[in-house]
Amino acid sequence: MAYLELDKVSYTYPNGYQALREVSLSCELGEAVAIIGRNGAGKTTMVKLMNGLLKPTHGRVMVDGTATDQEDAAHVAAKVGYVFQNPDDQIFQDSIRREIAYGLVKKHVARERIGGRVAWAAEVCGLEDSLDSHPYDLPFSQRKFVTIASALVMDPQVLILDEPTAGQDRAATDLLAGIIQQVTAMGKTVITISHDMEFVTRHFQRGIVMADRQILMDGPIARIFRDDDLLEQAHLARPYLAQLAQAWGFHDVLTSEDFMAALPKTSLLTNR
Image (cartoon, rainbow, N blue to C red):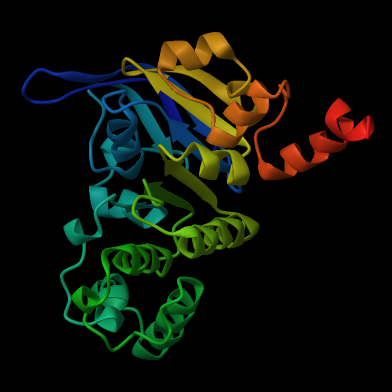
């Protein structure tokens, strides 16, 4: 059995809106998975079901062999950490150190262990020099890393990041990429909701395409972005570089590395 499984899961909100229909998937530990699709496709509802914030209306969500509707949300969240798109929906302490440490304090972790865990999470997220600052003294982009550190410090087996690159510059996206790489190298799973196709193609191998509250495809990122019919059905566009490369006649280019590898094969260069 996979660590995380959704088996024919549907969810209907109290107002009657069905946000998810008959969704099934599984994730093993150590994976990096990107969930992509337009707004309203069901992405956020699905990850909130993984995290236990929502319980399925129909079907079953399993985390580490136990159905989420048999556990309280806090117990599921200890295994599946969730970082909201807007960090201001999560931050409420008056220092970054207290914000990161809050979950450990609530779990009555020994003080001497808390200090080391907080220092590690802060370093991973580039916050080691800001621990005694107020979170709202940092710009929005850096506050996102405060919430990521607050999730990492709890040592979940699955880390969910909702639109982590929104509002971030290149240095911050590089830091995010390093965090994803480090977390998966630890044998944990990272699941990311993203509209940033460049980031997805560079840092994820597996993609889940959603549209109309269902999964259209679950497979390799490269295959997804080479499927014209799928992209049209999901209202998705290739990364800009891939679009440029296609206009030049390169049909297997997704990243800058692909682009550079393809250049020597062009008549433009070989005929000089």
